[in-house]
Length: 270
Image (cartoon, rainbow, N blue to C red; front, top):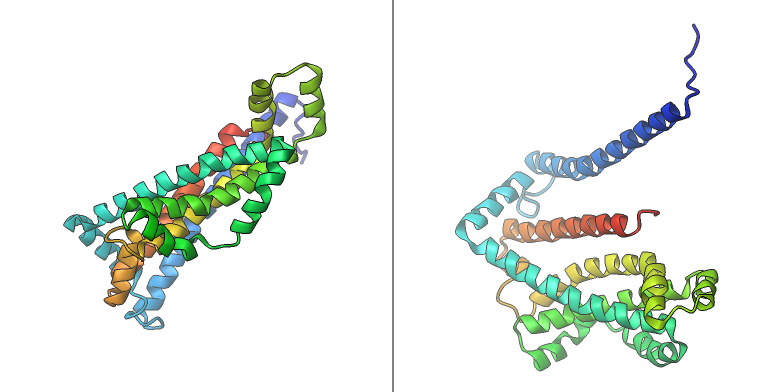
């Protein structure tokens, strides 16, 4: 039996494109199946008594508790407060981080002046400074926003500066040869060239923001997902505690997908 050999370049391209699309759908399916599989294993282990349901209640019971909290109106308040703090704090850390990172990468005097300060402050956990932040900014939203901004700033600034410094020298020479002005050089060369590494820093920053908000809301807060986790733990209301933990995990996954989608739009060649 003879095999059909495709010689038409268009048909070859179409076949390769379909194979690529099939692989992408398979990968997307795996990303959906994996968390569902984990929850199913957890459910079985809890229902069969292998897990102690006092400490690991089954996911179906946790989901029921989540809907009960939604119906009572308590959950919407916790989610809204935390998302507001995360969003504002994230922007407050990313914007100056990008600006200072670009300046550090572009101008050697600024880099030599700022870099020692950044390197000295970066190892200090922002949460260790939380008592001082609360003294300065109070126990309201502002202290939580400042804490998140401080945690997000450093990875964004460092990655942005590294992205500028790693730009291929040929692009700098072309810009100089064609007499590009400072603004043109900034927006046409520095910013696009640093974008791949910068976005990785921003991706890291969003993960740190979620870690920080939970810890920040455990101290000096009266609402938020972190507050919910901590008060539920102290009262041994473990279903409510797991609701908070799963919510943080869900938002982390969602924000990561959104940033990856933004990265594909801004960097289609990658």
